[in-house]
Structure formats: C-alpha cells, structure tokens
Image (cartoon, rainbow, N blue to C red; front, side, top):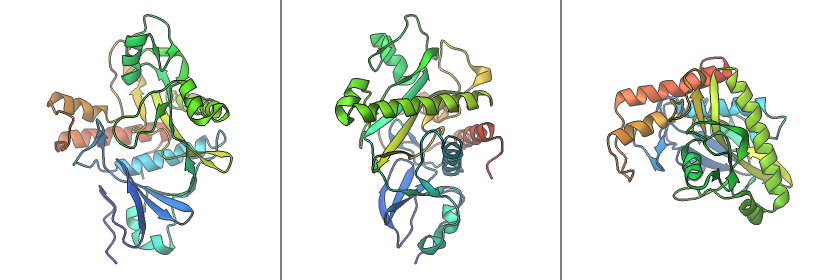
Amino acid sequence: MASPQPDSVISQTNFPGLRLRGRGKVRDLYELGDQLLIVATDRLSAFDVVLPTPIPDKGRVLTQLSLYWFEKLGDVVPHHVIRATGFTGELAPYAASLAGRAMLVRRTEPVPIECVVRGYISGSGWKDYQRTGGICGIPLPAGLRDSDRLPEPIFTPSTKATTGHDENISFEETVSRIGRPLAEKLRETSLELYRRAAAHAAAHGIIIADTKFEFGLLGQDLIWIDEALTPDSSRFWPAGQYSPGRAQPSFDKQFVRDYLERIGWNKQPPAPELPPDVVAGTRQKYLEAYQRITGHALD
C-alpha cells in the first residue's frame, strides 16, 4: 500500500484500497458501503476551470467551516455528517491526510436542484436584474444598484449541471422538476438557514450576500449535504467596507477571479499558474473568514 500523502497541501487524493467515486472541482469522493468519504482538497476553480495552483489550508477551512454550520444550524434540518475525526479501520493508514479536511457522511439521494438564496443583488443576479427587472422570475423594486440589500432574502434555484454552468430556473420550473411539496420544503429550509446564518455572520462583521445549499433525501427525510456556508459556496463581504453601487471586496475566490481578469486569461483550460502573492492573499482571506465566523483561528 502506498504511503499516505503529507497533510500540508493536498491537490488530489490517492488512497489505494478505497473506491474512488469521483473528483469534483474541489472535493474527492470515496464510497464506503452505505457511507461516503468526502475529502476537501486545496484545489481552487475559477470560471468553471480548476486552477493548477492549490491554496494551502483551503480544504481544511471548507471542511471545518461546514462542520461549524452543520452543528450550529442542525435544529433547522438534519445534516449528513457521521463523523469528521477518529478515522479507523480501512481509513487509518490515511489519517494524517484526512485530518481536518474529511467527513464521513450518510449516503443520500441528492435533490437535483441548487438551492440559492440571495440577500443582496450581485453576480448573475445583478445581470438578470439589469435585463429583466427581477431575478429568476421574481420581480424586484426598480432602481436597485449593484450589491444593494434586497427587501427580503429570495430563493433563486438553479439546475445542477454535471458539466458547464448551472442554469438559473424559476420556482415554478423547480416545481415541475421535483414536485411542489419538495420544492416548497427546499425554499422554506433554505431561507431559514440563510436568515440564521446571515444574522450570526453580521454580528461578526461579515455580510453573507448569497449562498447555495444542497440537499438529499434519506427515505422521506430531507438532509443537508455537501458543504455549508463556505467562501466557495457563498459571497462573504467585509461589513466595514460595504458600499453599494459597485462590486464589493470579499473573503471568497473573487480575489483570484479579479487577478485572472487583469491578466486577460481567456477562461479556457489550461488555466495559468497563480503567483505566490495571489496564493498567499487568497489563503489569508479564507483563514480570516473562518476566524471571524467561528471566533477562533483554524487549528
């Protein structure tokens, strides 16, 4: 059996003896009977392309922050995590590589909808608003500016594309795909998770402008899966620098996107290597977001 990888920076896992189910843009997924092992690597994607340069500690931030939110908001909806420490048995040889960045979870039937909640108007929502006066078919007041706070958080679902971009869809389209009872449950649950998380983050100097949730079904039970309110799945803005009418500084990978835009990359693979200052700056943003929200530094 091959020796475990060092646990400092992991851009791709290699665990002989474990059944690899697939590699996402960031996470590697292994099958263990009726359970799954999710390992967050230090890969980073931008414009739907995985970059060749990993960001140290990124996978640990994503995993530990997800665990924080899963526990904090577990009274809203059950989550899929079984454990995230004490990897024994067939996982024991890889314990060092798994430490801090892996979750053993229940296997569910994923709901084929990305549950996006927006509290502020930004990104694709801002573009949609400029074209239509609303987002995903939801009409909004006239005269909103880029990054304005919305009167109320809105649920703007999208498809889950296996390749390419997700596609924003209306709530009625969601109903047609999965049925009204489940669609309404997704909307209600997503909005409550967002409201609770946004209030907590605001008290710690972070605006959660928008975020996406994923859910699965375990029998008839709705289960919160994947990641939870991380800088990869959300827009985190520093509240002290918030100024609507323009794009906002952020704690997420927008820092990398801005660099790639500046150098004129055509957004087609292969992606360019990131310079050390961009890597260090991105790592610091992830670590600061974690510390602000949880109240302590990443262990």
